[in-house]
Length: 248
Ligand SMILES: [Zn+2]
Image (cartoon, rainbow, N blue to C red):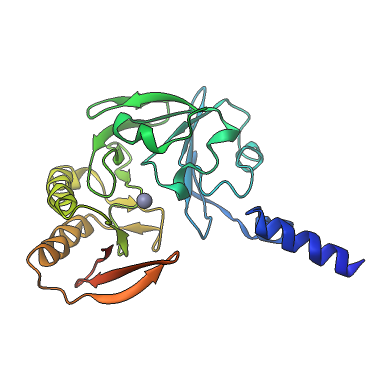
């Protein structure tokens, strides 16, 4: 019997589905009134309970169902907003069938999911929270930040954190990223905390400046790359003073 259970668990792992044990390890942390984090060690999700809907920011790898996690807190309809289109943020989309995201990342999303565009300057008002959408291309073309000015925080996906931040491909992405971070600096007084999908849960607004400084060091060739491999892909890691980047 034990062997059969072990085999079933192994098959589930191969299929990319979490075992019950792994699902039990997923913690939901309350970060504020009506504000929660699903502390998935692979990639965090955040959700916000409004007056008539729940906004779920990102959907992880899709290794477990998110709706039952949210249903422990709220029965309101759930709408998904994506910070960007990377696999560790969009894996659970099939569960919801539709999402809001920046149009520039639509091509990264599954075809059968209904896509509703968000752009710079849009607002998402769910009663208890009002989010300003700020486009910050660089990490991906369609990366966005959700800024809650009244409650003084941002949800920044992968773009503001210690990293390594994935910056594969065209080197000019660093120029775009730096421009985006400079734009985000203009909002830094509106946020005391910047929540990240990876590594430390939240950073102070000074981290935006750290991202700029270290991306500039990279651009100026002042960081010595270290060869590494990530998900079977040979690449370099560039370790700045505070922020690291994966790049080709
Ligand atoms: Zn990403």
